[in-house]
Length: 590
Image (tube, rainbow, N blue to C red; front, top):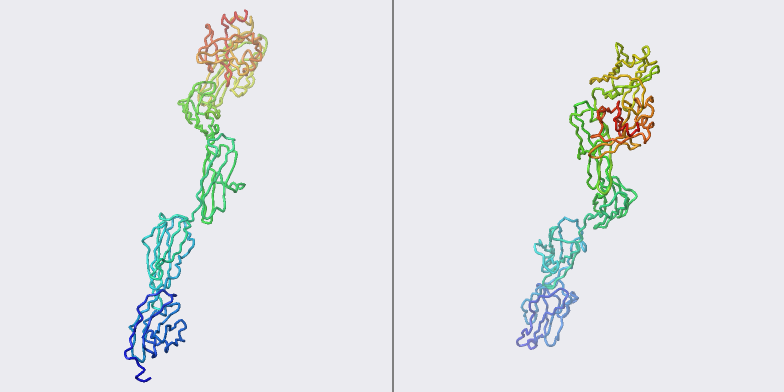
């Protein structure tokens, strides 16, 4: 090239400028030198890209424009991070270079990733830690957390420069307390930089897992014993329920496996709860319920019969269960007096007359009642109940009977008359026999061939035990005379089968009955009230009123006649008298 071919003054009409572009875009760096027809070089970070328009080593690079007009623009297809450099346009023959132009390539972050997504599961009560990565960005991405349209503050932020020295990776960690999270919530991680000012985002759904939340319903309540009850075990669980297990009072009910249990209930359901255990992969939840079963009294502590010494205290304990609340009543059998409304019945310094049957009765209102009977036996001296005058026929065999109540049983029973004492066996004309009955001991002195002297003799019946003794003097009277006349033997009855005794709060009514045949043993002493009753006829009886309930050994006055109680059973009283009141004689038609 000669001097004449050079332009007088070559100048840049366009020079490359600093540019900031996003990776992947098309970029054109302008360079125009009008009137210059020489070689133009593009320099990148001090190194020539090629000669003239030949940039074969950079396939994405192209020199464009009208060469004849001096246009040598550098066009870069799909800008990459490697294009982030300083470029110059040089006119070699004119010894000119453009100003350096800085091409800054921005790289958007990769799509953010939340660790553990898209569903993050945690156990109820645990805090939530979320970590979001936004990698390979230039400049480093900014990360924000969003929930329900609101930015969550307090996240920890860090970034790491990659080996190329240009890109960076960003990590953000968000901590949420258990009280600040709910299952089903969606939390967004949004990453942005200058390359993507609108940002990129991803989200996770919170899945709070928990043990089964269980509710056990019982229908109907309250319920009467013997009726059908339905138990329903409703549960909310995450993960879902895998198993139901039922138990009653701690014992597994194997035949039931679903969420419903139906059963006919009894009293045990009141004290033994029914439980439902619900299981999911996290564990089990157990809930139990008692049933408000209405049931009649059931014995919880059974009272025991007592045998106590005279003058000691007697304490009975009787416990019942029932629902609704029950009432306890202690009474003595045959008496209308309430002795206690507590479980305990205490009898202070007991006497012989305290002996007998006691009833502990429990009542559950509108449901039912129950009772338990116990006996009180009082240890004390023997008590003899015998008619002081007994009858016999001259020349016949005669008997005198002595009835003895004794707890403990008598150690010794003896008959004595004149200078003779006989406890058992036979002595001459006399024989002593002793018979034990449920009510006591009967000792019988039998005399063969009654002689007149026997009617003049005083017979003494004496019984001993460890607490003392009792004696009864008995005379023998020759039998004869009218059955209805004064002095005849008569009996007073109180009988379960005959209903002879009626009681109210004022007086007791007894029936006075004449013996049809005074020679009968039942009209003399007898062994049981029904033996007397079997000999009676209703037309031979008169109803009388006495002021109080007859007691064993008690004496009762009726028109100056003394009557003595000689037998007394649970519901039967027998009195024997030696005179007949006039008004009774009239009633008997004598």
